[in-house]
Length: 209
Image (cartoon, rainbow, N blue to C red; front, side, top):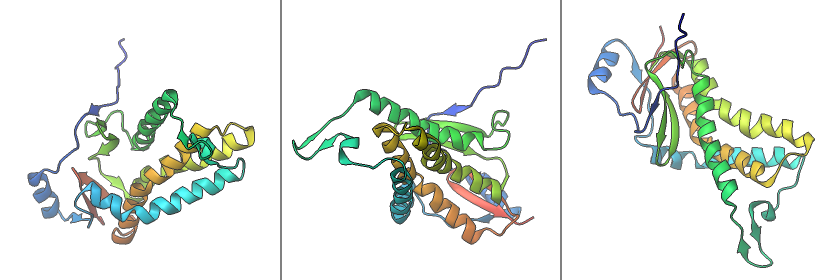
């Protein structure tokens, strides 16, 4: 018997909302979550969280290994910056690992026709139009920060494996997780517990029953 091959679905454009689906969801009692109208505004509103999350990662790293400018290829004595191509490649890979972590925490992501990984010129994203609970939404959003910028440091730090590129990735991932945490704040404030959430492009909705 042939085994069915299951693959991750990939798209290369940002999902846009469908007006017909929007009308159907609102008619069915779904409530639109108030969010910034575009990713640029989300990033701007997330700046305070960038600072907070970045500092959290820095503090955890400093428990095991001090952070210096030399760690990031900056030498003030000679006023020079060293860029390693291999480190850049590793850094880019981790940008997509961040999104893959989002993806694998989406329930039934491999079998869903409405769940996919986006690969675009600015990076990547994970997206689903499946109905999920508020708790699952928060779990999906928070896991890349916890796994890369907290747990990995706690594991690698005592082993002495916090290399400069690992430190940079952990800090950058923490800063990059700010939009995820901003979305968590929006959902936590607006969406009652035990509610369900669904996406329609860049629009999000919730329903209490």
